[in-house]
Length: 152
Figure 1 (cartoon, one colour):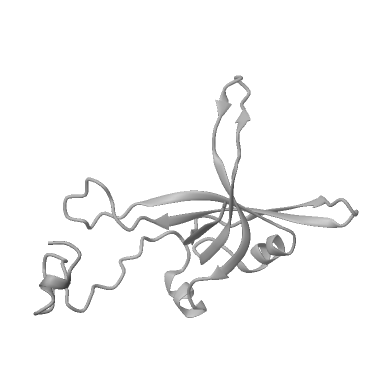
Figure 2 (figure 1 turned 135 degrees about the horizontal axis):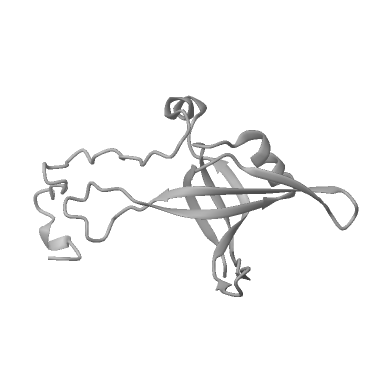
């Protein structure tokens, strides 16, 4: 099975081109990139550093037209689709290996008001702190459940 779900912000405005489809109609091809925050970072001393992974995405047809009409830099979206190899040989004869997400569905991940507050551009999300958080960012364990935990 080849299925991927990503939530992130567009790193730049999409590039959209139109090509001829097999039946002679024009087909929209939208290319864009999203920045996806990592939940945890290896080697982080205090856990406050935020990093992101960047994924190249492509949407075809009606979905490509949707991307052209409604998405811009900074828009937070959920993309579901599949991963395809995007390997090629460059001008120097070297093999370049990469992957691309072929979008099958795209949904907005925030309200228009929240998007306007963000005013575009990639900004790592801080995320809300848990209600029972202590100063060291660990949740307090409620009394009486110590023996029911899957770890000690």
